[in-house]
Length: 282
Image (tube, rainbow, N blue to C red; front, side, top):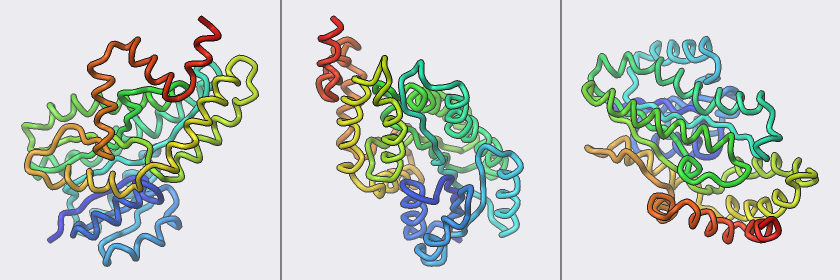
């Protein structure tokens, strides 16, 4: 029998690509999203191995109902891919607390809630894989990404703790860190930035950063590179604690890890064009 995997946020982008790829690799995939009508297209693309499931990761009742449906299929989950995500882009002081809370509800507390709900069956089985979709922003936080980046930093920390905690139970935990991937998520972030272009305090910086950021996702690799990393984390005998997708972006993490913060800041400013605004302020 194929190992069964639950993928959250599977209606588009990385989640959709991951669900389809895993199905073609022989997994039984339960693809979840808040609105199942968005899952109809992919349910026929996995050789009959994709089952759509309605789930809102911010709603415990919705999570429990989804897991009851999966259990009703006579299935015990081997893997969980925590992919559901949200973003908020803009100057730190201009983002409202409700915007901050909304991002944390999905990216952190939603991830925690689904994982807590799935863990008992994995622990009883003495095996399982949990793959948390992080981000390069979880190590390298760009300006105007404070809310999103802080949630991905949280995912890094909770994944490390969880990995060590679950090792005696035969459950392995990995983080997959996508860079800029060509999905609709990037366009959504652009639209959020656009509302601050005329801001009196930050407008000039936002315009420069947005012009650079606008080029990143459309020129990025397709989401299959993330799906392949997820597949490796699910199947490797000894999975890595971290995967970077695409792999050639590991240099960026090395930059953050080994260079002094001041030098890293200057390099990033030169790359994204914000060096000019620093010169005006210095």
